[in-house]
Length: 612
Image (cartoon, rainbow, N blue to C red; front, top):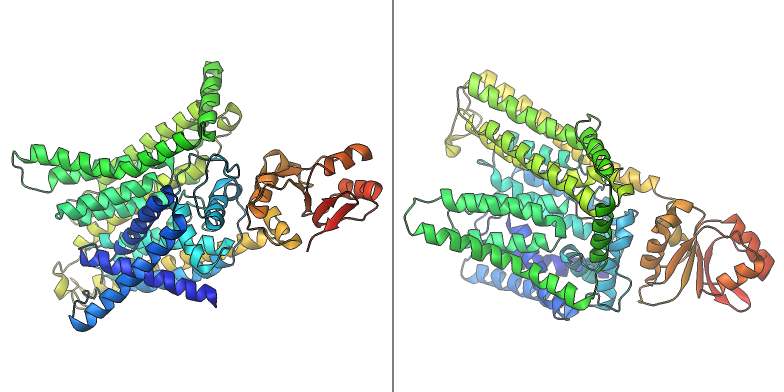
């Protein structure tokens, strides 16, 4: 019950911000993500000054106060917002959004990176009420900015901390940003163009398959916020103050999501500059005003990130990221040209392989855009920009390939670089972004092919002939069907992956004990029979997150004498055995005369005492 009360408080607070930004001119389709990013930036200010918990209450209560204010004003002054109407894509977003949210609420966290950073960061801020400092050894990646973690922390503060609550919070952010793509429609009453965008949204999750929605990683968050930023620039092109404010908010937020957001920020900056230059009649004064608008807007957007960099340098004498950079650059200097050529060969092999999901995506985007351009140009005799868009997106892909290759040779150990570690995951972000750009440009061209260009006159009669009307209706049904089924397949796919993961280490931990939510420094041994979990530190990271300690260590090898075993165990305060380990069981019987299979135990001089 308290979960629902907390959720209602959070929702009413969010609606207050949405009502406010809409009244100052923000598009109803961009109002959701804009309101969320404004909340993140306010929370960021509070967190950086050491008042995170106060900030969470302030941000939410301010939103609730705004909700009440606009509701009362609507009653007495008729200051009501213009109703945009309900469209087919609204039903699609609401229905499939709720279905996805329900599955995510019951999903566990399994992916490695949740425990090495993303989830542990949220847990840390939720239960300590502040950003990590130099003394907080629990957080390893101290240079990672905290935007999504702050958003999720605010949500779980009200609805309660759990894996599912964190996943739903991130999904709300993603879904809010996804709604912005419908601002790109020329006519929102057209079912076909609406469903094409829904279909593009469903397809985007196919390219996110390496991560899926049941993880807190930001590989999907980056492109979906970027597309919202680009759509906003187009929508506000004739409103300079709103345009500059929008760009500053989105640039600031993206840079605080992840350091690698720089590539996406550059794309936003280029489109912003292009918009400033092309959207007004040229007068000599604009030679001064355009550079000033551009520099000030991006400067304001960069300030929060500059503050973060300064915070990292002053708080952590050396961040983990910096250690890695020094180590890798040193290694690069020692690498032979032959090793670099091997990585290059592997990279080219990967991007030219038809087995590569990202390559399939690039081909699909090009085929659809170029084929549509040909049909419209030759058959309909209408000029359109789809060929230019295809070439522009290919340039973006090539540029991203170059930057990705640079990352492999400059900042990755050879052992990981030669395997192109995480290639599809990194490429997915750009494929998803370019997919949305292509889809929005495509539907705008398709809309211009409609027989009736006056939106007010469009109805069931507004077709050139009965044949074109029939073709339109059949195409709409087919695209609508695929948009629904493909999104639903993402929901069922997430359910299936949850079932497949039922015996992974994080779920085994839940079966032996409750998680600890009080930050501590207890030394805990995680006994794991899976050697790979220990060698890649997965067991240790899961233990650190679950027991909220910076001293959890995974171990698989217990081939030792009873005396050495006793001495090793007495070096810990607790022992967690999520899965039966035969060697550990045998040695415990010999040393402590206890039959131990699984569970959480406190280490005492007399032996292991089971914790309940």
